[in-house]
Image (cartoon, rainbow, N blue to C red):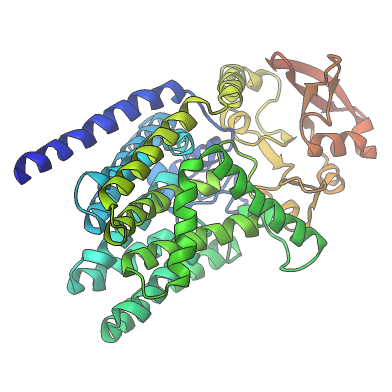
Length: 498
């Protein structure tokens, strides 16, 4: 009977994965412009120009150094970068599900361990970001692998593998240092393997120190430039407090769209209060708390479907299994209570997936794929060797390889990232006076139509409105316009002959 039950459970998981992958393919064409920033860096690196966006400018304009290394390997092998990034994300999403199931089975063996894979595989944010081509699934894979090693790995394996995994976590995402610190703290307070901990801490610290030294010598900074462009703010102040509020609301809206995770969040509070709770649960809650802190500190994110919350999804899914286990050992009518909660979580997961808002995803699929089809022909307008300023520095710069670009929102520009200003609570920075001081031959601007059908810069993004209001804009004249969506156009402005 036990063998038959185990066989059935092991059969269900591949079926769930297959169904989820089939659904994911509906979004496979979804792409974000920023992904192509990686690709331009990879092309330059593979061509022998170094880790640069513009030749000779050593700025770390991407968030994940490890993902850049992986994509560079794909580039060396002449693999198509976008397809490689997307399919790799899908493979990693499957591996993440399997690891999460293994961890859940250790917490609560049996059929209820399948709740974690269900919550992951049929969560729209998890599905969408698994085919995004970004580093999110790799980051989750490293975290879950670390958790599995901590709670079940042999001491000899943990001693070597864990510090290496923690190092990889820190160079995969900027907030990875929080996760690494949380896991090290857990090993110190709960495992009490002090001799091994000294070795692990020394190995981790040595690897991290060497990487930071490389980053300082090569890029001239401790943190990636994207940190300053997207987050970089002080700890206290009016802006900071509003940013923290936005970050908290970002997570609240995530829960509103994905209410199946609410019980796990509530249970996490219980685990924190009851310090003597299951150690595996404590570790998971600490990791979740670290990701939540990052969401609040960063003020959230502008990208669709809660990118910064996605790493918390597998953690909350496993915590949900811990909640079911807690009910099973405390409730008198435990089988009924656990079954009701498990079925409810599955139903809410399905309903959330069914009735989520897909309009923005469909819009972005059309927008960015239209731009991908138009961008190769833009070389006929802006010739190689020119200097152009653009707010979207992914797809267009990738296809205009010989054009030098000023990133008007600062992702690949150190000056704007560190000295630019934000419009209200908008995530992106701008510094028009600096851009115009460089005398670019071309300025690439976006417009979006209002309800009356009139195209305006302010409707596209604050940076375009601010650039248009600067005195320097009068020195440029419209040369070419592209319709990339029914209500969005891109305009090329050329410096007038003075």
